Length: 346
Ligand code: NAD
Ligand code: LMR
Image (cartoon, rainbow, N blue to C red; front, side, top):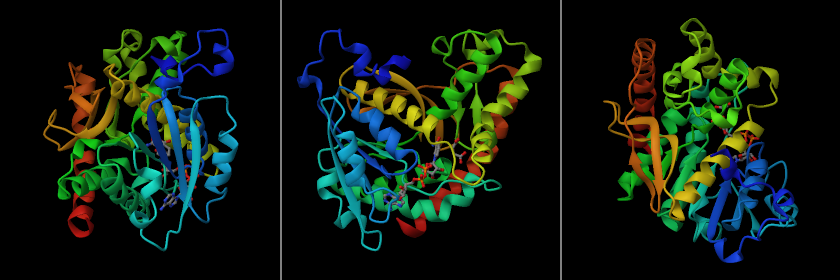
């Protein structure tokens, strides 16, 4: 339900006031002063089940995290927003105790974005190191939190970080790759083609989050299932290339930030709803046995402990069966890259 994102308070002024007692969760946004980080922090600070938001970034971030926190601290929501700046020349684990202690959910858009001509995989060397610093600190200070990794390449970084958790004796299912933007895009593109409202469309997107591994299952949503078969390959390709469409339009000044912040908040709100006792579904990229690959994105039910159930991929038509093979061939290599990194570094 899209409205999980919380109607802004100004729209809800005359609704019964949410009790402050319902504001129970502490959330951290690492990379919170960045392009995704700032609007994502805002959306999470507007979630009435959130009591505290840590905005963490590095000391040389474009805006000091304390400034983002001061700004968001004036919103008329229950949450308290606190900024934390870390020195990247020192281990994150030595600096993040207060920031992370007590967190229920950590969202990680810390990392370098693509420029035109780059693949997400080109970001791996730099971003794996950034993710490792954050995830090691989570392992120490909030090992029970759900960690939503937004940083690219999700397909390789999630296996590496889940392995890091396994090596520390922690639950690898706390590490979740955020693929919600692919669902959001598929829903929007289907709405444009069919003339229906995107709020009535929920296309499952399975596989992973890069190129052909992004696999929208149009046959499983009642609205997209009505689209004629000859239009599906182009719709599928547009969904796969949604990120590149934005990278090119931003012409070297970054990748999707606002639609990702929306999607990260959609993901985060669902996780918090699950933690609060209402099981809630979202496709997400996790350690998995639904295919022969050890990591895969499919529908996940989030409950009181985070990932509760990982659902199978359901029935696919023959086009989708062909796409699944293509997605798995590429994903397999990207998973191996992450696991090799973990072997050498975690
Ligand atoms: P950005 O450069 O605007 O922001 C990244 C932030 O991370 C910066 O503020 C930077 O200072 C910070 N940072 C760098 N090292 C850090 C560290 N060690 N600890 C904490 N913060 C650190 O980039 P962006 O546009 O916000 O994108 C961030 C990441 O998200 C990129 O890797 C991008 O590819 C990825 N992304 C993923 C999806 C998805 O669907 N999963 C969508 C869009 C972008
Ligand atoms: C996206 O899908 O928008 C992100 O993964 C960013 C990118 O590099 O395309």
